[in-house]
Length: 229
Image (cartoon, rainbow, N blue to C red):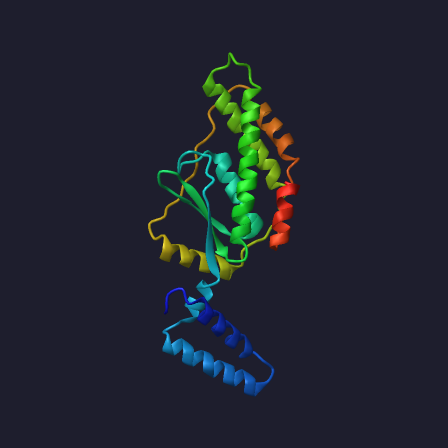
């Protein structure tokens, strides 16, 4: 198949859509033209389907490593559910996170991730600053992690499901296998143990309840998102 030939793929999609026309003559002609193009350029149905899958990469990765704390994975999961996409953490000198799936949703997912992740990191830092200065740094970090877990849990309750269809899940898995064949999984780093862990989580939950997650569907809605979150 020709590389980066989006125009050809879009033309084929339009022809195949016309092939479902109620006009038998129009449908037959469109199907014939589509089949000839697919044969000429060695394009398969799978190629057409995969052309609807894309990735949007965000360079905002505050976790510092590819083995993030669990609250960060929890936030990633929220974005995946909210927009019906999948995510992958890219390693390197500066890790990044990519959202892949339906090309009409991945950019919005990436944008929302940056908005919420920045809010989460700022809220966690502010909570840690409020801790008694005589407390050990490890205890402050643990409490901050528990606070973040509560924050994420509250945000999750605001999410309206945008579940991926079975076909989308299969295509996303195929896309991942082809583009990143060596990718793996991570379970995330657990928060350390500390006193008042439940209290920290509860405070985080209460603050997270103030967050409102929307599912923008256009550039205009995307701009609104910045002011509503």
